[in-house]
Length: 506
Image (cartoon, rainbow, N blue to C red; front, side):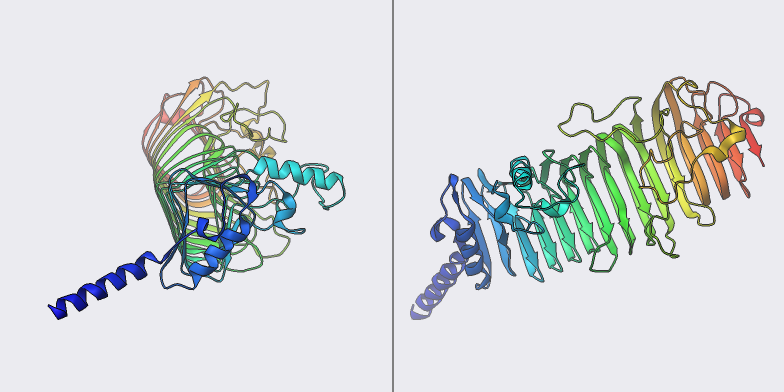
């Protein structure tokens, strides 16, 4: 009996210790409402939890206004259902120079943000106050007078740097004034079942991974005015993005859905995407871009549904950097893509629409794979791809004759996006400066007529097409090969006889 009593007492002590690991912000002076600044109580709760072995900071139901807080090792910030953290609308609360993020961490381990609640950056209100302070001369900003306040002057929602074993689960993130989530040089990141609703201001990417490794992004729903899920390789902390897995995500964006780049100084390796849906998105559903001297290698994307989006696939090797180091793009597989590309602005009516292209008028732009002279995109496999275009092209809008293909600008140093070339001479797919390109089981069609060939290949080596159906064609040719060598085309179904439908140009 005595032994049983001791065991029971020990169990109670263990349960008591476990219960003490929850740190409710109310116990540290936090108060709900829109007039109380809870920055200090929140930070006190985090600091106390940091001292415990296993710690959870609880944000209960209610609205709690806070300025920047710092998450520390071993701490889980947990928002209960109906809890909402509201970022301060006072720009000065985020510091005088280089705005602090609402929630930040640096050199920390085992940190997480979880729960059923909401973190709301109130980005529109913060920027409104920032602009007022800019007019008053309190802040300085080189870009705001001609465009908008710089990204450095606008607080992000979450910014973790050089952290490991990071989790963000189940919560809703809203209305950031800048990037919603920014993970720089972090390892072992797990983002699962979150919702991002951020269309209140510019440059508010849903998820940004910068030179981070061993990343999982799963079961997320993202609606952002800028890129949905974006991997970058840039900044002061050198490195690459490596071992990134994305699965079961739904993205709406006024930029691109899933993107590697634009910042591409280091590189991207072993990137895998499964079961992605992109809808009502202004730019590309899939954009793979290396333009700053970095590399893209081993990318595998499969099962992508694209609805009402400006472009299905955009793969670009460019040379934006001002050095003699050139980017490389190779070993890419994109499979099982079904896309609908309208002849209309796909994000029309959203709070912040994508900008109208700063190029001459053009017809609907095809998917593309483009390198630059002497630097080829290599070893790309496209299989089980089905793209329907809105069509409706007109020669009165723009026209590049087949004997004038050199008129397509190289735009080597241009910002990489699907409209960077202006008019393109094909309606379904355009490939230039590439090697080892394979199309397998591909279907293209348009809803309204388009006078251009379906596909143009210019300066392409080792082209393999095995299984191609072009259901729509107004005139011949359907496929144009220019400076294209070592090609093998078979199992094709075209509206015209293949001898007339395929043209080879010197």
